[in-house]
Image 1 (cartoon, rainbow, N blue to C red):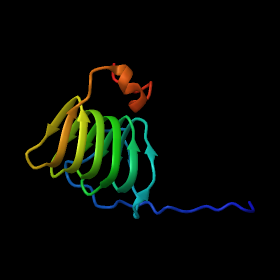
Image 2 (image 1 turned 30 degrees about the horizontal axis):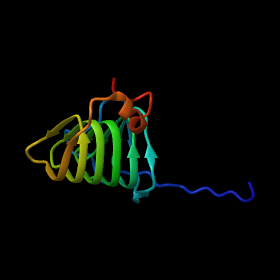
Image 3 (image 1 turned 180 degrees about the vertical axis):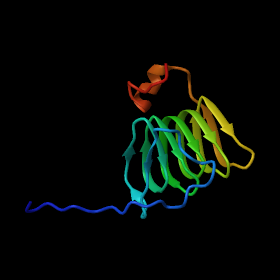
Image 4 (image 1 turned 90 degrees about the horizontal axis):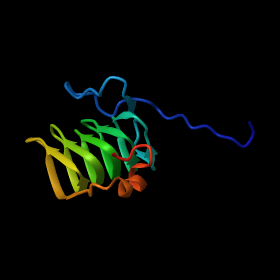
Length: 143
């Protein structure tokens, strides 16, 4: 088509998956050789295996070992095994293994494993689904 262009994004893992860091069965994976810059919206379980600069929004997100997010992460459930620099807003947040988070975490439950590093502040989300709806969307707001 005249006037249209297609860019081919190379698909390859940023880092090989570490043993014990496999995503849940049925989860989709996001991989890229170069950092992704922009806002990403995922529905369902997703495992992030690359670097992202921007906002990552979804239902159930896992930031894999070797992956990084610089920006904000908004989801119902977030598991971090890699690195996040910015704000996390989620009902349930888990910092597992060698996770490193620098910034604020807004949560209802927060689990920080012994090897994980957290430099910032954590704040409780109010248990009011109507306030969560604009953040998580009507279909994914906790009930």
